Image (cartoon, rainbow, N blue to C red; front, top):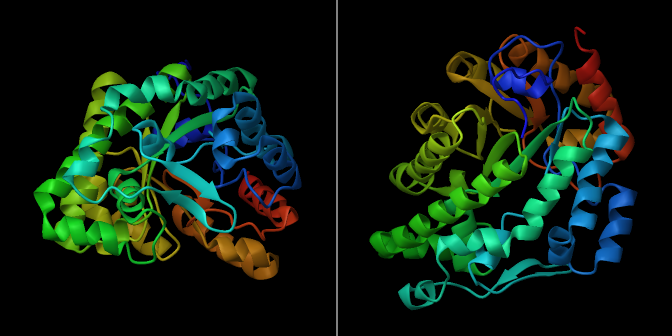
Length: 350
């Protein structure tokens, strides 16, 4: 485990609010289908879950973008749905469809799930990958572990697949909020165990993805997005007081300031829709920000990508900041555009 009391890595310095030599950069989904070397390993692995659960494969695809682009951080290659898989829900990834789960829609189905203490045993191969990465990454590269936030994971568990409006989960949450809270509480505990095991295996930073937080109205956002993240952060801080936690409440909008302040997370990742100037004036005083270039600008490349990336750097780069995207890299992204973006960030005022 790294010495977190004296962070020397660029990304750790940013999260600690310290001056670093330049702005750290990594990109969500930086290991993935846009890379030919990833597609080769993916074909060899068979199923997507086999790729996640086989340390040889998962380590390799995590390292690929580091070798190619020299990012300041590597994020473990895994998936947010390994947690419901570990809890006993049937999870599969179908080509062209994405994840398909056996829906959990009532208390009877919820009662069939395992308790959170099974997570560590069921996901042992994931933690082996983390341990391997902590030894195989370059010394200057920060290792990020991650999990999905309870609300976002619950939307897949209840709906049985991804959904544009999260209607199935919302229906349960609105019809019987105390019942739905039992699922959220289970996921809080399971997520804490999953993230804790990653830290114990060597992860230096944790990121929690709440991709569908922005679909909730204010009172439901407070109950099912903000308060669960606050509970996760509190429990992790009790166990690992020096480990930074970045949250990504995508689409939080006007709730972002309160979310950042009340959850106590170290860093806040911004989605593409957030104005960098607004974020600087309203959020950066609370801690490190991360974001928020549109992934489709990375597809387009060229002068407009450079112009908008520089705008983000100029606006947010005076305070604690990590350059990233406003969501994950999409499969049609040309790798040469990624290389150009990384060079731009690394050369900015260096």
